[in-house]
Length: 358
Image 1 (spheres, rainbow, N blue to C red):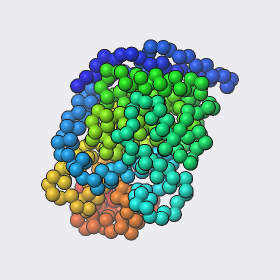
Image 2 (cartoon, one colour):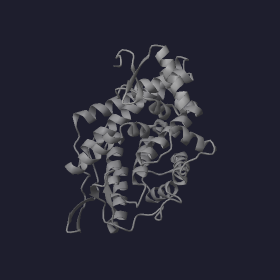
Image 3 (cartoon, rainbow, N blue to C red):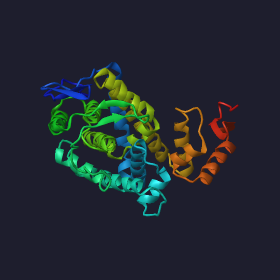
Image 4 (cartoon, rainbow, N blue to C red):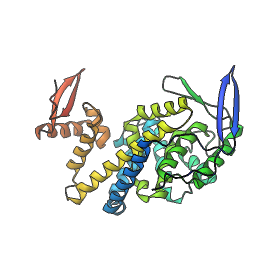
């Protein structure tokens, strides 16, 4: 494992805003700022070991249904972060060619995202042309400046409308993106850390009028898949969606600190969680117990590791099922003494059996 020395460095953009005036300073031959922490080193070692275990199972490469399921989870997770309203069940239906009653924009986002993820192995992660091509497919028919860098200044805001930071001034975007791609190509950093740095720096530059988050997560997956092909089918984006506020918090913390350490640590923990999820699935498959019921319980049990309780709506999204089917799943788990059923704020809630509801 090479945490390694860092070479050939990129420009970094710093900006302030005073009376609506932007001041941007480009600092040549400077690596993107971050700190290598003990937590990162430990996570890289553990992720490398987990990746080896998952590769040894070989279920992802040999099971097209599992690959498709994971890809759908990836697309749903990445789009849901950007306020796409389709459930996992609806995303699955759209990609199966079924009619779904939903906003046309949301349906188009699903189809576009699926197309570019299916072409992942055709993309060069260090090519600016491929980056623009991917953006063109991801945002086709959705934004005016599709497949091109933005031509106007942009501010990045949160859900309450608060400005988090201002994107690089448009005249500097092309050069900075090229320099970032070149840094990613030539850096000696371990790819697990390098891909996280790239993801954060691309979001900071904010090179597109829209679709920056989707492209950032796509390119993170692309970079990792070139390190190990298993990442092409690992639904990291689904785990990010499950921890969406922590994702934003990590970005904001890195923005405040002026370097990406907090974001790198968050993303490494997310990658690790995604691998553990995939390995558990593979272990169940190896034991010959991978039926629909076991898969659903696995997803619910993992959800409850980070949440106090689960509700019908959560099961619908996790398992891609209707409300009625979610009720039957939960009732069966209560009957099997895996979950307790309780009432809270006008809704039925369910907790792990060891922790009785009140």
